[in-house]
Amino acid sequence: MNISAVLLACIISTILVTGLISHAFAVQLTAFLSPPANSAQPDLTAVRFLTLNYDPGSALAQQFNGKAEHVRFTVNGTAGGMSQLISTFNQDIATEKQSPVRFNNATLQYEGDLIGEPNQLLISYKVDLKPSMSNYVLQANGTQGSIIDLDWRSVSVNQPLIVDTPKYGKVNVNYPIGLFQVTHPQLGQQLLNSPAAAIMQDPLFNFQAIGQSMDSWHFLFDPTGSIAGSAGLFNAPAGSRAVSVYALGESSLREGTFTETVRDASATIGGQSVGVHASTPPPSAQIQIPGFSRTEKTSTGEVALVTTQAPQGTVTATGGFPIQVLLVFGGMMGAVAIFVLVKSRK
Image (cartoon, rainbow, N blue to C red; front, side, top):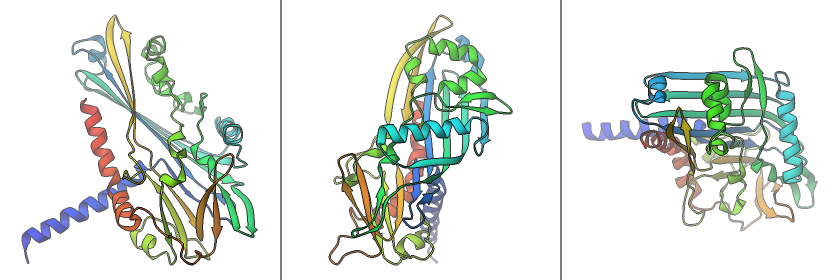
Protein backbone atom coordinates (compact mmCIF):
# COMPACT_ATOMS: atom_id res chain seq x y z
CA MET A 1 0.00 0.00 0.00
CA ASN A 2 1.24 3.47 -0.85
CA ILE A 3 2.41 5.03 2.43
CA SER A 4 1.96 8.57 1.11
CA ALA A 5 -1.65 7.83 0.22
CA VAL A 6 -2.29 6.40 3.68
CA LEU A 7 -0.75 9.44 5.35
CA LEU A 8 -2.80 11.77 3.17
CA ALA A 9 -6.00 9.89 4.02
CA CYS A 10 -5.18 10.06 7.73
CA ILE A 11 -4.48 13.78 7.55
CA ILE A 12 -7.75 14.48 5.71
CA SER A 13 -9.72 12.30 8.15
CA THR A 14 -8.13 14.04 11.12
CA ILE A 15 -8.96 17.47 9.73
CA LEU A 16 -12.59 16.52 9.10
CA VAL A 17 -13.12 14.79 12.45
CA THR A 18 -11.41 17.58 14.37
CA GLY A 19 -13.43 20.14 12.46
CA LEU A 20 -16.73 18.39 13.18
CA ILE A 21 -15.96 18.12 16.88
CA SER A 22 -14.81 21.72 17.12
CA HIS A 23 -17.65 22.99 14.97
CA ALA A 24 -20.07 22.89 17.92
CA PHE A 25 -17.94 25.58 19.58
CA ALA A 26 -17.99 27.83 16.54
CA VAL A 27 -21.70 27.99 15.87
CA GLN A 28 -23.38 30.91 17.64
CA LEU A 29 -26.94 29.75 16.98
CA THR A 30 -28.50 26.37 16.28
CA ALA A 31 -32.23 25.70 16.22
CA PHE A 32 -34.57 22.90 15.13
CA LEU A 33 -38.01 24.42 14.51
CA SER A 34 -40.79 21.87 14.12
CA PRO A 35 -44.14 23.45 13.12
CA PRO A 36 -46.30 20.71 14.72
CA ALA A 37 -44.42 20.97 18.02
CA ASN A 38 -44.23 24.78 18.22
CA SER A 39 -41.54 24.29 20.86
CA ALA A 40 -37.80 24.03 20.51
CA GLN A 41 -34.52 24.05 22.41
CA PRO A 42 -32.25 26.47 20.52
CA ASP A 43 -28.64 26.95 21.48
CA LEU A 44 -27.29 30.52 21.60
CA THR A 45 -23.55 30.90 22.17
CA ALA A 46 -21.80 34.20 22.80
CA VAL A 47 -18.06 34.24 22.02
CA ARG A 48 -15.63 37.12 22.58
CA PHE A 49 -11.85 37.57 22.85
CA LEU A 50 -10.04 40.42 24.60
CA THR A 51 -6.36 41.29 24.76
CA LEU A 52 -4.77 43.70 27.22
CA ASN A 53 -1.39 44.78 25.83
CA TYR A 54 1.07 46.11 28.42
CA ASP A 55 4.81 46.72 28.71
CA PRO A 56 7.01 43.85 29.92
CA GLY A 57 8.07 44.61 33.46
CA SER A 58 4.97 46.71 34.14
CA ALA A 59 2.76 46.12 37.17
CA LEU A 60 0.29 44.15 35.03
CA ALA A 61 3.11 42.02 33.61
CA GLN A 62 4.26 41.19 37.12
CA GLN A 63 0.68 40.40 38.16
CA PHE A 64 -0.33 38.16 35.25
CA ASN A 65 2.73 36.79 33.44
CA GLY A 66 2.68 33.00 33.55
CA LYS A 67 -0.68 32.80 35.30
CA ALA A 68 -3.88 31.13 34.08
CA GLU A 69 -7.31 31.61 35.64
CA HIS A 70 -10.51 29.85 34.65
CA VAL A 71 -14.07 30.66 35.70
CA ARG A 72 -16.66 27.93 35.04
CA PHE A 73 -20.23 27.54 36.23
CA THR A 74 -23.68 26.36 35.16
CA VAL A 75 -27.04 27.81 36.22
CA ASN A 76 -30.25 25.86 35.51
CA GLY A 77 -33.99 26.39 35.40
CA THR A 78 -35.42 29.63 36.73
CA ALA A 79 -33.42 29.90 39.96
CA GLY A 80 -30.20 31.80 40.57
CA GLY A 81 -31.31 34.87 38.66
CA MET A 82 -32.31 32.86 35.58
CA SER A 83 -35.95 33.93 35.86
CA GLN A 84 -34.98 37.60 35.40
CA LEU A 85 -32.52 36.70 32.64
CA ILE A 86 -35.24 34.84 30.71
CA SER A 87 -37.67 37.70 31.28
CA THR A 88 -35.15 40.18 29.88
CA PHE A 89 -34.66 38.10 26.74
CA ASN A 90 -38.43 37.87 26.27
CA GLN A 91 -38.89 41.62 26.68
CA ASP A 92 -36.22 42.34 24.08
CA ILE A 93 -37.62 39.77 21.64
CA ALA A 94 -41.06 41.33 21.99
CA THR A 95 -39.99 44.98 21.80
CA GLU A 96 -37.07 44.77 19.34
CA LYS A 97 -38.44 42.08 17.05
CA GLN A 98 -42.21 42.34 17.59
CA SER A 99 -42.06 38.56 17.86
CA PRO A 100 -44.37 36.30 19.89
CA VAL A 101 -41.51 33.89 20.59
CA ARG A 102 -40.95 33.24 24.28
CA PHE A 103 -38.13 31.62 26.22
CA ASN A 104 -39.11 29.53 29.22
CA ASN A 105 -36.69 27.82 31.59
CA ALA A 106 -33.09 27.63 30.44
CA THR A 107 -29.59 26.38 31.17
CA LEU A 108 -26.66 28.80 31.08
CA GLN A 109 -23.03 27.68 30.94
CA TYR A 110 -20.32 30.28 31.45
CA GLU A 111 -16.64 29.92 30.61
CA GLY A 112 -14.14 32.72 31.13
CA ASP A 113 -10.36 32.39 30.86
CA LEU A 114 -7.45 34.71 31.60
CA ILE A 115 -4.00 33.73 30.31
CA GLY A 116 -1.05 35.95 31.21
CA GLU A 117 2.02 36.45 29.04
CA PRO A 118 5.04 38.77 29.40
CA ASN A 119 3.44 41.58 27.41
CA GLN A 120 -0.28 40.77 27.24
CA LEU A 121 -3.26 39.27 29.03
CA LEU A 122 -5.49 37.08 26.86
CA ILE A 123 -9.14 36.83 27.89
CA SER A 124 -11.77 34.62 26.28
CA TYR A 125 -15.50 34.27 26.88
CA LYS A 126 -17.94 31.56 25.90
CA VAL A 127 -21.46 31.89 27.31
CA ASP A 128 -23.94 29.28 26.19
CA LEU A 129 -27.71 29.68 26.69
CA LYS A 130 -30.05 26.76 26.00
CA PRO A 131 -33.66 27.84 26.60
CA SER A 132 -36.94 26.09 26.01
CA MET A 133 -38.66 28.18 23.34
CA SER A 134 -42.28 28.36 22.19
CA ASN A 135 -44.71 30.39 20.06
CA TYR A 136 -42.59 30.59 16.91
CA VAL A 137 -45.45 29.23 14.74
CA LEU A 138 -47.44 32.24 13.53
CA GLN A 139 -49.92 30.14 11.54
CA ALA A 140 -50.36 26.37 11.52
CA ASN A 141 -51.46 24.43 8.42
CA GLY A 142 -52.82 27.41 6.50
CA THR A 143 -53.44 27.52 2.76
CA GLN A 144 -49.71 28.14 2.20
CA GLY A 145 -48.63 25.75 4.93
CA SER A 146 -47.30 26.74 8.32
CA ILE A 147 -45.69 30.12 8.93
CA ILE A 148 -42.69 30.32 11.26
CA ASP A 149 -41.25 33.50 12.77
CA LEU A 150 -37.51 33.94 12.15
CA ASP A 151 -36.91 37.43 13.54
CA TRP A 152 -36.13 36.27 17.08
CA ARG A 153 -32.78 34.91 15.84
CA SER A 154 -31.13 38.36 15.95
CA VAL A 155 -32.05 39.25 19.52
CA SER A 156 -29.64 41.59 21.30
CA VAL A 157 -29.73 42.13 25.06
CA ASN A 158 -28.00 45.38 26.01
CA GLN A 159 -28.49 45.47 29.77
CA PRO A 160 -26.55 43.54 32.43
CA LEU A 161 -27.63 39.96 33.08
CA ILE A 162 -26.86 38.95 36.66
CA VAL A 163 -26.92 35.35 37.87
CA ASP A 164 -26.18 33.94 41.33
CA THR A 165 -23.48 31.28 41.64
CA PRO A 166 -22.38 29.33 44.74
CA LYS A 167 -18.65 29.89 44.09
CA TYR A 168 -18.46 33.39 42.61
CA GLY A 169 -21.58 35.08 43.96
CA LYS A 170 -23.37 37.45 41.59
CA VAL A 171 -21.88 37.48 38.08
CA ASN A 172 -22.75 39.72 35.15
CA VAL A 173 -22.71 37.16 32.32
CA ASN A 174 -23.54 39.66 29.56
CA TYR A 175 -20.65 42.13 29.92
CA PRO A 176 -16.94 41.31 29.57
CA ILE A 177 -16.31 43.30 32.74
CA GLY A 178 -18.21 40.64 34.69
CA LEU A 179 -15.23 38.28 34.57
CA PHE A 180 -12.91 40.94 35.99
CA GLN A 181 -15.39 41.87 38.70
CA VAL A 182 -15.24 38.35 40.17
CA THR A 183 -11.51 37.75 39.62
CA HIS A 184 -9.77 41.16 39.75
CA PRO A 185 -12.30 43.78 40.88
CA GLN A 186 -9.73 46.58 41.32
CA LEU A 187 -8.48 46.15 37.74
CA GLY A 188 -12.07 45.90 36.57
CA GLN A 189 -12.95 49.23 38.15
CA GLN A 190 -9.92 50.89 36.57
CA LEU A 191 -11.01 49.62 33.17
CA LEU A 192 -14.52 50.95 33.75
CA ASN A 193 -13.06 54.35 34.62
CA SER A 194 -11.11 54.46 31.35
CA PRO A 195 -11.90 54.97 27.64
CA ALA A 196 -12.05 51.16 27.43
CA ALA A 197 -15.31 51.15 29.42
CA ALA A 198 -17.39 50.79 26.24
CA ILE A 199 -15.54 47.58 25.33
CA MET A 200 -15.91 46.20 28.83
CA GLN A 201 -19.68 46.83 28.72
CA ASP A 202 -20.26 45.70 25.13
CA PRO A 203 -22.95 42.98 25.44
CA LEU A 204 -21.90 39.41 24.76
CA PHE A 205 -25.46 38.35 23.91
CA ASN A 206 -25.63 40.37 20.72
CA PHE A 207 -26.84 38.29 17.75
CA GLN A 208 -27.61 41.16 15.38
CA ALA A 209 -25.14 39.81 12.81
CA ILE A 210 -27.23 36.64 12.56
CA GLY A 211 -30.22 38.81 11.64
CA GLN A 212 -28.91 39.60 8.18
CA SER A 213 -31.31 38.66 5.41
CA MET A 214 -32.07 34.98 4.92
CA ASP A 215 -31.08 35.59 1.29
CA SER A 216 -27.48 35.56 2.51
CA TRP A 217 -27.88 32.13 4.13
CA HIS A 218 -27.13 28.90 2.31
CA PHE A 219 -30.23 26.74 1.81
CA LEU A 220 -30.61 23.00 1.34
CA PHE A 221 -33.80 20.95 1.04
CA ASP A 222 -33.00 17.32 1.80
CA PRO A 223 -36.13 15.31 0.86
CA THR A 224 -34.88 12.06 2.42
CA GLY A 225 -32.56 13.32 5.14
CA SER A 226 -29.78 11.30 3.53
CA ILE A 227 -27.28 14.13 2.99
CA ALA A 228 -27.71 15.68 6.41
CA GLY A 229 -27.95 12.32 8.12
CA SER A 230 -24.84 10.89 6.50
CA ALA A 231 -22.89 14.00 7.47
CA GLY A 232 -23.92 13.44 11.07
CA LEU A 233 -24.64 17.13 11.51
CA PHE A 234 -28.42 17.37 11.68
CA ASN A 235 -31.28 15.80 13.60
CA ALA A 236 -33.82 13.47 12.03
CA PRO A 237 -37.30 14.76 12.96
CA ALA A 238 -39.78 12.23 14.24
CA GLY A 239 -42.40 11.37 11.62
CA SER A 240 -40.63 13.27 8.85
CA ARG A 241 -37.45 12.57 6.93
CA ALA A 242 -37.51 15.69 4.77
CA VAL A 243 -35.70 18.66 6.24
CA SER A 244 -34.84 22.21 5.19
CA VAL A 245 -31.48 23.47 6.38
CA TYR A 246 -30.35 27.10 6.51
CA ALA A 247 -26.70 27.83 7.21
CA LEU A 248 -24.85 31.09 7.78
CA GLY A 249 -21.11 31.50 8.03
CA GLU A 250 -19.38 30.59 4.78
CA SER A 251 -18.18 33.57 2.77
CA SER A 252 -18.81 33.49 -0.98
CA LEU A 253 -19.62 35.80 -3.89
CA ARG A 254 -23.36 35.14 -3.51
CA GLU A 255 -23.59 35.20 0.28
CA GLY A 256 -20.97 37.89 0.86
CA THR A 257 -17.94 38.03 3.13
CA PHE A 258 -18.15 37.53 6.88
CA THR A 259 -15.37 38.98 9.02
CA GLU A 260 -14.59 39.41 12.68
CA THR A 261 -15.78 42.49 14.54
CA VAL A 262 -13.01 44.38 16.31
CA ARG A 263 -12.80 47.30 18.71
CA ASP A 264 -9.78 49.03 20.21
CA ALA A 265 -9.27 51.43 23.09
CA SER A 266 -6.68 52.40 25.65
CA ALA A 267 -6.59 52.62 29.41
CA THR A 268 -4.20 53.88 32.04
CA ILE A 269 -3.52 51.23 34.68
CA GLY A 270 -1.04 51.93 37.46
CA GLY A 271 0.15 55.01 35.62
CA GLN A 272 1.01 53.07 32.46
CA SER A 273 -0.80 52.89 29.13
CA VAL A 274 -2.56 49.62 28.29
CA GLY A 275 -4.03 48.76 24.90
CA VAL A 276 -7.40 47.00 24.93
CA HIS A 277 -8.38 44.97 21.87
CA ALA A 278 -11.69 43.11 21.46
CA SER A 279 -12.71 40.72 18.70
CA THR A 280 -15.87 38.76 17.98
CA PRO A 281 -15.71 35.90 15.44
CA PRO A 282 -17.74 36.12 12.21
CA PRO A 283 -21.41 35.04 12.52
CA SER A 284 -22.25 31.37 12.13
CA ALA A 285 -25.63 29.68 12.52
CA GLN A 286 -27.77 26.71 11.52
CA ILE A 287 -31.56 26.49 11.43
CA GLN A 288 -33.35 23.23 10.58
CA ILE A 289 -37.04 22.98 9.72
CA PRO A 290 -38.75 19.63 8.97
CA GLY A 291 -40.46 19.69 5.57
CA PHE A 292 -39.83 22.16 2.76
CA SER A 293 -39.56 25.82 3.66
CA ARG A 294 -39.01 29.06 1.81
CA THR A 295 -38.43 32.45 3.36
CA GLU A 296 -40.40 35.62 2.73
CA LYS A 297 -39.97 39.19 3.85
CA THR A 298 -42.78 40.87 5.76
CA SER A 299 -43.35 44.44 6.88
CA THR A 300 -41.53 43.69 10.14
CA GLY A 301 -38.98 41.05 9.19
CA GLU A 302 -38.81 37.55 7.75
CA VAL A 303 -40.79 34.32 8.06
CA ALA A 304 -40.51 30.77 6.76
CA LEU A 305 -43.42 29.17 4.88
CA VAL A 306 -43.35 25.42 5.50
CA THR A 307 -44.99 22.60 3.52
CA THR A 308 -44.43 18.86 3.64
CA GLN A 309 -42.82 18.70 0.19
CA ALA A 310 -41.18 21.07 -2.27
CA PRO A 311 -43.36 22.36 -5.12
CA GLN A 312 -42.33 21.06 -8.52
CA GLY A 313 -39.51 23.04 -10.11
CA THR A 314 -38.45 24.67 -6.85
CA VAL A 315 -34.75 25.37 -6.32
CA THR A 316 -33.80 23.11 -3.43
CA ALA A 317 -30.24 24.28 -2.77
CA THR A 318 -28.21 27.48 -3.06
CA GLY A 319 -24.51 28.18 -3.26
CA GLY A 320 -23.42 24.56 -3.69
CA PHE A 321 -24.61 23.74 -0.19
CA PRO A 322 -24.00 19.96 -0.10
CA ILE A 323 -20.34 20.23 -1.06
CA GLN A 324 -19.28 23.61 0.21
CA VAL A 325 -21.25 24.03 3.41
CA LEU A 326 -21.36 20.52 4.84
CA LEU A 327 -17.62 20.17 4.36
CA VAL A 328 -16.76 23.76 5.23
CA PHE A 329 -18.86 23.49 8.38
CA GLY A 330 -16.87 20.37 9.18
CA GLY A 331 -13.65 22.37 9.12
CA MET A 332 -14.98 25.77 10.21
CA MET A 333 -13.78 25.55 13.76
CA GLY A 334 -10.33 24.57 12.58
CA ALA A 335 -10.24 28.03 11.05
CA VAL A 336 -11.65 29.52 14.26
CA ALA A 337 -8.91 27.78 16.24
CA ILE A 338 -6.32 29.37 13.94
CA PHE A 339 -8.17 32.70 14.34
CA VAL A 340 -7.81 32.43 18.14
CA LEU A 341 -4.09 31.64 17.90
CA VAL A 342 -3.47 34.51 15.51
CA LYS A 343 -5.41 36.94 17.70
CA SER A 344 -3.46 35.82 20.76
CA ARG A 345 -0.16 36.67 19.06
CA LYS A 346 -1.11 40.14 17.86
